[in-house]
Image (cartoon, rainbow, N blue to C red; front, side, top):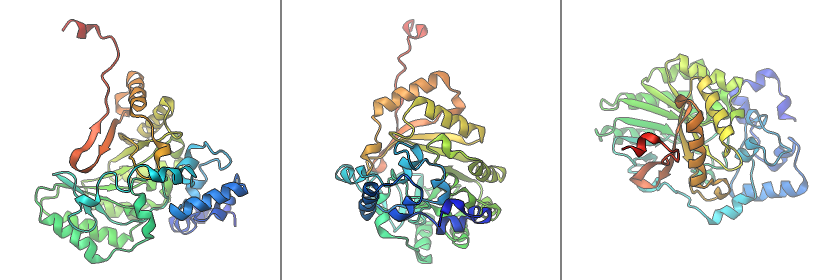
Length: 348
């Protein structure tokens, strides 16, 4: 079966997309560009780091080009096995800051709720690759209630970020119930959802799902587009549904070697986001996770690229370049002092 030759009704059905994800080396062989050696590599890597790719996201890549930026983000890479000896399983020390199962508190005014460990696509640079070994888990009502109860008992919290995995893969009733339990806490002012669904399976965002989220405004939506080719008409439609419902959409890109580590690529990405009214919020330096060292871009190079962009790109298009530090240290701005020769500065 050639997944890329589905009917239009199947292609637009997110349940079909999720149920027909490519998850075996043989599935990848259908796309072309895979010889016996490559199939063996994919199999070796997937024994340690599984993969899953929606047909939609697979359609965005050139499977015959090993340097394709979409392919790099989703196909297993033999370098992941070499990189397993560098980095950490939990580089942000999230597990150490988990007062109850699933709830991460690294900041005094906000916390993050892990609503699921499922994703539509296993991004190879994921900073929670440690979850992949657990398989798909269904969390009980008591799990969600434990997180809500803890938030209710801590009035210094004003914001909860619902993340995962991808929270938009929760059953709609479960998502509605969890958001409702948080919204009922008097001292909570803002909810936030973190999801890569607009980039990897945009058909999941429909009027019914958006209607659920709209009930809990002020609710902010953070997504992750890393390359301009991910900004498709389908992705634009999904984000427009959110925006027209009064849900602001921001983007948190990750700087990835071989994907977006050129100034022109980043500028095209940021311009594309602005055209959709999506705010470029953060550009993250890639976390030091086991299995992702081949994605690392030297911080000085990232700072140099951002300085080039600052000089010739609209400020509305520019995210903050940051390093997410472990524990409570938070996000460290990576903003170099300009090398420009400013006459006014010399006179002061």
